[in-house]
Image (cartoon, rainbow, N blue to C red; front, side, top):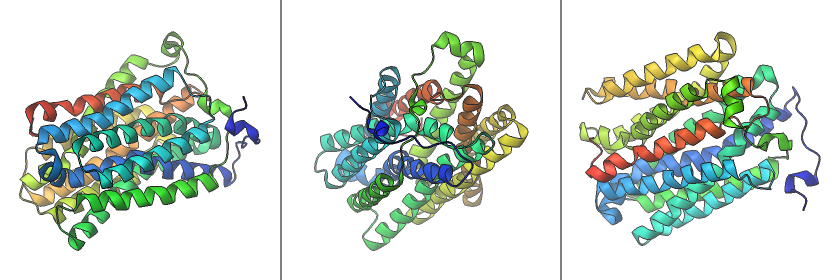
Length: 370
């Protein structure tokens, strides 16, 4: 049976504008599935807790379901890759994400929310697995750091969009209007799906090459240290972003102020992916990765030790500036060391498990404070 992407010639790697068009298309897809579908939740978590979930424990469980589905799908799809080509896989995942977001908006019971979150989580993995490979084979080597930066910048844009949309919806309705926000996000995802289907062209099947054996990988890169550090980064990032709104509200901020702070996180994240990716092209991947992880740890410590609004804004902005770029730099590093490999397969599997684990402390304790 012919692969969908094999029905037409694969797109060649060039130094023209073709690679940029492809990168922007997968950026839009990942921004919806891993951005809007994931980062809209912190804005409506308090309202959903009061209206349908009942406790922070249930809210943590809902987040855990999404991240658990993402982690399981990441492992399964990495070991047993689909026969569909990479761009067909991205379009399929985006379609499933749209369906999940629509169910979130119309859900009348908690089980519907769990089902929708599971669907969006699984489809996020379906999109993210081939994304790095598509970028790797589309962008010329000397543009690869920039390309990965653009790819991750979509997540920052989605955070800003969620903050703006949450503020508009809450001003239009009230602070408890969580269904309206999910409905708008679902509508945006449908528009992006149409655009991606029309603009994303097939690329080489090398973008979805089967991951290499661990023994072979260990001979080429420090796989254990990379997975360990990226896993710890995933835990910290998930806790920070998932419960940031709740933390800020407990410090005395209003909904509008907390939404602005979260939007600031997204705004600096946009710069982070491109900035750190480009700097790593010049100064080296390892140095930038180390500096970014240390800075992120410092921001996390300051966040839980101060109630000063101005300092909180600075910390949140700085966290976004250093963290979103870490993924783009790591992706560029693995792409450099392992050409035409689905570079995020092993490190992203570890990070996805870490993000899932990060949802369980508030689930078991019934509070984000732990």
